[in-house]
Length: 283
Image (cartoon, rainbow, N blue to C red; front, side, top):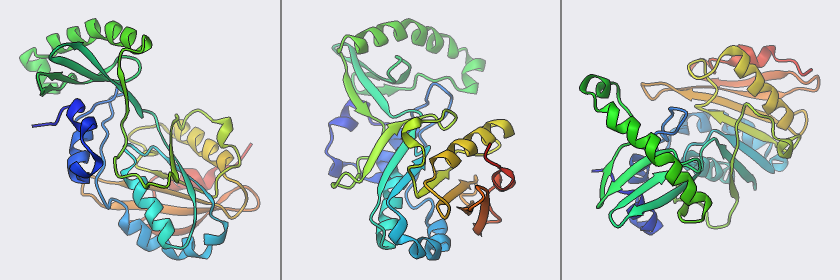
């Protein structure tokens, strides 16, 4: 049975391993329809292939941006990989959904929700109930109470959050390094952040920029934003995706003097959006 949010966030970091942690987050469906899916050692194959290029640049790698990190588990692994390569970096990890709240609506009823009151998990006397609708629910009509419950609860949840009557939590891994070299920031890759302009020496976008999620025009927008975040020629961009067979396909790019991108290395045939990256030209 899925552990409740109250129990999960009340447990010490040592009490929950990364596999159990990943299973907890995998049951949470965000309001845009995505899940917090991740698993340990997901991109090890990419690290092996890209390592020589990283090691050549350890002296110039200071600020790293990891985009669409889900729970940040693979960001922790990225930090460990870069440290092992000899690079001392600070990582900014972004995702669309990081902040959440546990709201108590009764003595035995708690709801984990996002800041807008979107329910992520119901907890009734320690028994967890999913608030999201499956396809089967439309056949069994179970979608009716789920949809009605969500629409009725959202205003109450939002009101309590704004009144400070909630427990703020973050939907990120508990296995963070103790020295604080990773900062988590809520950010939409489709909206350019002025705080990121010309700041980073390496940007990784793993399992976010793909043709299943976004149109070509949206991907071009994201590429333009990433381009604006790169500090100077010679900086790196890593784009990858894990398919259903758990195989990785990715490309390591380098920013050239003319503002275009060049391929340094590929894994699994390269990123599916590689051509869009190579065709990109800054305005």
